[in-house]
Length: 278
Figure 1 (cartoon, rainbow, N blue to C red):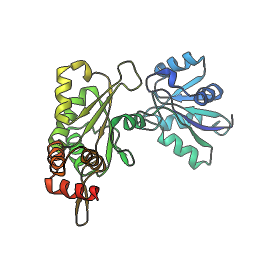
Figure 2: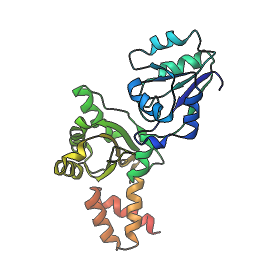
Figure 3: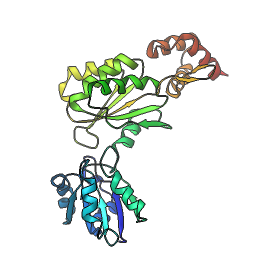
Figure 4: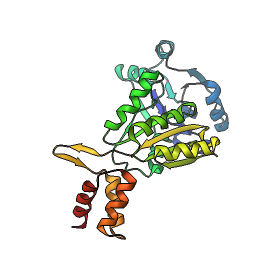
């Protein structure tokens, strides 16, 4: 394997999701850089791989770069995170930039991603979406994060820890209650599950069964009404809903059904329904 940095995606839960190319890369790399060696060694042991491991986290990237820079142009180095695709809300940016700035090989070995998987199973439009990582930990920043979501014009995806899940949903209930939400739990693991609905519906479900609040979560939020010059237009998901209902119900009934489900004005729904019937 040629010298350079190989950014390798690893399983997000199910170890069987490791790709053949990822396994081959990890097996042939001279060095493996990971977040937590104790965590990564479980995967490497399953694959029968024994390598020198360097731990890299948010506070030691420059130290790691200093340790390896003397032989960096001669070695093949694999970068992995604790789970999924490295650098997605994980450390590694400075390391990648160092390789690029020194005209060294950088490539990616694609694979499992909780962001992509959550979009696929959310039931939301995914032609455009925005990934926001984790909300800020500080109280003010946390509140602002959710308040600003009402201004996003595409589907939004973010990570949330289990101890912040209910608080996050309460924020969503406060600022964007009319939009659909998908809460994806423990993706690819035994307890994988998805709860879909409004923030209010999901809060009720979680309070009814507290076990559903345990684990790791990815939240997907439907795009809001898009504000454009001269007025507003209905989101793609609502448009599809109207089109589907028009095949079974009268125009008047469709307007009333969609209004009750989305809180969108009857006038806007009626206008869109007329356009779709043409």
